[in-house]
Image (cartoon, rainbow, N blue to C red; front, side, top):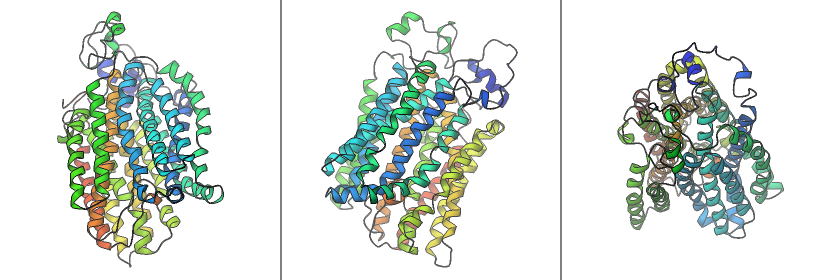
Length: 536
């Protein structure tokens, strides 16, 4: 399926949301005049409440994600759990992988409202558990519950966007979500540091749950009105072939649960649930093995791969690993871009602190401008005039990412100014903003409504799993070449702790990740062809 031309988007918007142009267009009639300005956009009367609530939920999750790293070292020390520090991060990631698959199935079966509300509630409950923890294991349990909530929420939000917004509006909504990360990425660590210093680390966790209530109250009626219920192929009511080429589904079939992409929407696909458990357990074992380079650690690593490989092959679209055109390449590109960039970014503050003598605060602030350029890249892809060139935009974005990663270790040379990293990372974030938002837009274009949940889960699995695998690989290379013991790695500057490090260890992280990003340039050339289910 090719990307819609700007003028075609208005025709597609007349069809049920989540269905794209050619296959969902009504009988030939005069296309309505495009609605210009904010009144017909994501802040128009129809979408205003929903858009504000979605951005507010993402804003709170983003603030927690960027602030938690600041409080985590203090929490681990006070709870006498420094030796378990890494598990506070891995617990979140592993449970979120399972929750993504669960949320996709739940959303496709019953609509996104239930997993969204449950996810927000679980996220808030996890924050309360961590904030009130009296031991490190209870703290880790809270982080695991947070991961369940975060995984449920992110996939449910994608399904909401696929149902409630036409193709013309989805790029702008993705740009709004990206923009909601800007302020937390700059303010989050500083605010968390201030709260931790004056009120205690617990309030970084306990202060957020109460803020979740207003956006949730605003979101529930809007989601119920615009995106609730089981997705039904558009041909169900007309008896004609649907977007994916399937025959219409009768009301009796829908009521009995026979509708849906897989022909079984009445209950959860137990096989996919088992695979989700496998991918979570496999990722956890690999993360555990990555904390220790002893020969004995090969055992949990092998067990992790045994769980992980069949689970990944079963949960991602067929053809993902060979970059089949269309949806499989979109899912693969998301993982390649996110994994390479996050793995490299996690080591930037550490490099600036240990090799150039910057304070942790200044090292973290060197990446702050990236939040703004990320939002700018997402905004650029949202412009209607860019739609015909989305593939080229994504390839160009991956070139910027590769160049930024390759340029970062240049500051290991004393003659290179430190600000080079900030400039390089700003351009890298510009490319990431265009790529990440575009993969989200393309995924929804290539997904029939009844498949939006499962496909969104696949996209998020590719994102999260690549972070785990490439971070583990980068951490192992870093430690093996004299980089010291990496306690944990993540999105925030303070997620990385290490002993004295050899400069070559940093090069061993950045240069391979730049090669991975360059591979993403080729993958980006394959996202524009194919169609729904391409590669299966």
